[in-house]
Image 1 (tube, helix red, strand yellow):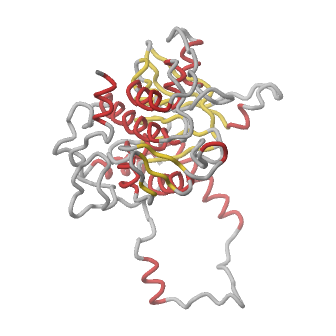
Image 2 (cartoon, rainbow, N blue to C red; image 1 turned 120 degrees about the vertical axis):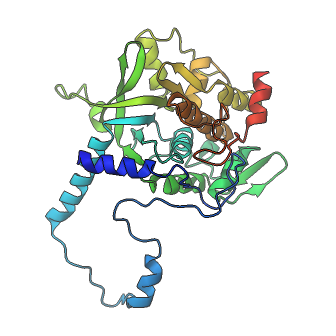
Image 3 (tube, rainbow, N blue to C red; image 1 turned 90 degrees about the vertical axis):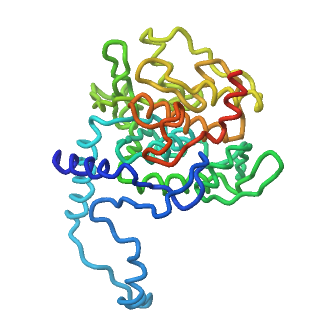
Length: 358
């Protein structure tokens, strides 16, 4: 199994020009490669299977439909073997993203463009996406302030364009689209229904996360000792969202072990101040751990942003490039992306970030 994992990693690293992007313009204003090479998972189904099937196979007869036979034990073995292989592969990985909300997904998506980087996503809920399945107050539409709409262009998501913002007809369209693109990539694994119970800290540096099944984490008080597991990482990105049962757990744990002094919690809503601040303050909060998304507002006492999502996307992308920088990889923050793994990348919100920093 370890040999297979090594083979996969080496194959991912063999061509630094490999490009996972669709033919859409990058949200970082890069020029897409003319002939992108797409890495496929091991023994994956060819993308043109539907064409060959339509030419060689009869259409469904819904009046008399029969599935191919299978043993129940095969189903169990397939699920178990593949999941255990994932746990072995990602027990020591490059980046662990804790929280698969809009910021965490955007971060993992950006990281996954570099095929040599291995990304594990930890999500306590069965359904990833955080609050990005709906807009505000359980309404459907998602409002994204410009220039973050460049990220939507890259993902190929349609929207209604207004002067200073765009509107996606349903927030789930963003979440479903980014997940479908992200999870298809061979250097990414989502571990949903898994909670990050604690951090691994060595010599004052965050070096990974302590994991457990989410349902076990929620029932420690009802059962006898149910010890956790671990996942080592070179960089941990904490995108746990704002305060709540599983919210802001990364920075709250840093406070409880004395690595930071205070977690003041987010202030009252101010969209114009909040979104700029969340992107600007996305950073490596302690060695080895980067904070992104609404967790940034919790640690800095910044205003809450309410039902707008552009800052989540750009904060996630910025966190990804901070992680790449920490790993010594080409990144947009120090200009090292020019002529490297990807086309030249410039943060879609670069002007806004520079203005806020000033």
